[in-house]
Length: 141
Ligand SMILES: [Zn+2]
Ligand SMILES: [Zn+2]
Image 1 (cartoon, rainbow, N blue to C red):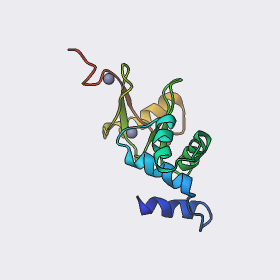
Image 2 (tube, rainbow, N blue to C red):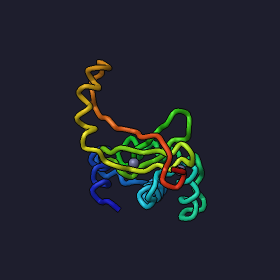
Image 3 (cartoon, protein in one colour):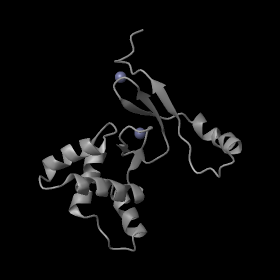
């Protein structure tokens, strides 16, 4: 558990608001998973810890944790959202064959933000790079 994160939530939500047991379990599941689980995978794992938890509760908890900045949601087109315990800026590589999603960190990405902002005329807040391809297990060359 990252106590610092719990502090952040208390600070952000007017003090004294601890995570409910369900939200705590959902957060623990995301933090314990090495990869980037989907809501369905988080639900499967959460159910082992809290057999009565419903899919809707897991889904709502994920949304709450995302808004509180404790997990990140990653979306790719219309495939299922994935949840990420790593909330610091980082980049992703996704396998188009098996869906494997791995983290990497390319310091150069940050320096692209200004020119990306210029081209899009957006006010930049964050940038992240997604490499799409075949993972080491799926590549055949
Ligand atoms: Zn793969
Ligand atoms: Zn990630």
